[in-house]
Length: 352
Image (cartoon, rainbow, N blue to C red; front, side, top):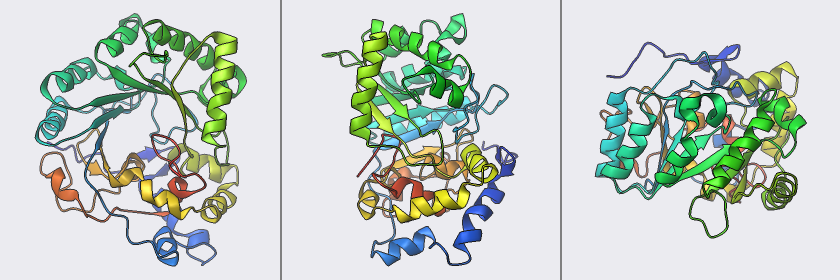
């Protein structure tokens, strides 16, 4: 059964309804900047609609051993929300019934979920899913002895690891993710390399994620990847496959930061002015659905954090036939400018 008691998801000092009010009013209500839906019309782009489902993204819980300043999920050690086994089993049923190429497991730190390993093994044993992604914060591997064997578990189950590493030096990483995180991340990356991750000729993929540390767009993804590879290998002998640059969307903790630092209007103006029509062609919300720990279905995980459920009367894993979502209109708001600014942005990096 869906837990309906947690209708308002707290985010820093603002709940979801307050965030949506901020994104709808101010510079967007006085005409200074166009609403996202109006911007699409302005450049003759039709409504964004769902296409054939390829990616099933699951947020299995908000518990995390870190509290990162850029986290749009507002995760941390005190968060107790966890996906029930009932919801996990319903997600498995959808994987069995539908041709899903990729299952993207995120959190929080998804490895902290008590049923994490069972779930991963079940996907491999019961479904024809090609790729399982786990979004790991790296430091979880060192957090407790029960996690020490995670690199081997990941390798045995052919998991594609995507991990946040804000920068290739200690100061910038620790400023964004907490004291000591950089050193722990480097050690965790070495452990992953030791079992074959990120190595040439290995089929074990290890990708890193860069998020800007302030109110600005990420630099060119290809150029930054070259720099990351050079610095991490020369300084630490670390190897990885690709670097994804992801724009910070104006929601949750980052929205709190923008308002507290008085950067909100300037940042939104940047996103709107850098709107790239070409980025709308590859938006992840078209071929992805995101499932919350409660079992609700959303167009993407950013919409999940704003509680903007899919455009359907049946919007849970218990009652939705996900194959029928094709051509449904994607729910949008002003945070969507973050995915369409500059080179565009998705959970797999730049898109234009």
